Image (cartoon, rainbow, N blue to C red; front, side):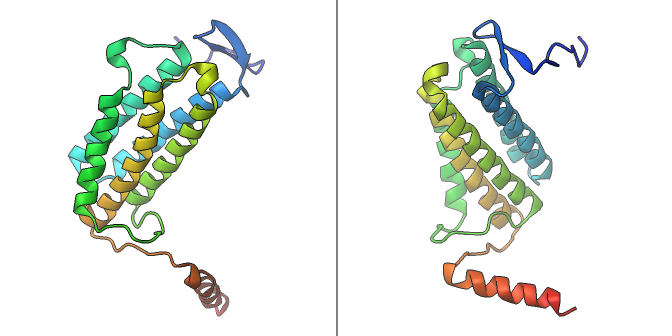
Length: 196
């Protein structure tokens, strides 16, 4: 099969669950495209993470994201291939592990102090986009609650993972954000540039 078919040149593409074409601007494809973006960002994160076991976890999450996309497109997949409560529970176990290894979070932080950490934060934001779209399409696509719970917990897990990578694996210092310093810091940093 070739990479291009020319069948989508009119701005429509096929949705398998309904066995018909829809415009590519339909929110169904917005969700599928966002899941694809999640997967690509996860690849970017996986090649940055300095730990083989963590890379393996990220790659396995990519497989689950593809399963979610397949279910959205097809309407259903085989029961043993569905994202389910056990997958969400495993994410919760990961979150608990990462949180046990990092200081308690008491403030907002500036996300990502390394390329690996920053890429994981981009992943979590992309997952939140997918979750919002999935919630909006829940009734129309009959999206299972297990998928919504999985996406919700995945974003939390990626946040905790990013902190673990930065603070534990790469020994980076977290930058705490404080509202009262924001304008002072911005003004001071711009002045250092304008001096030259």
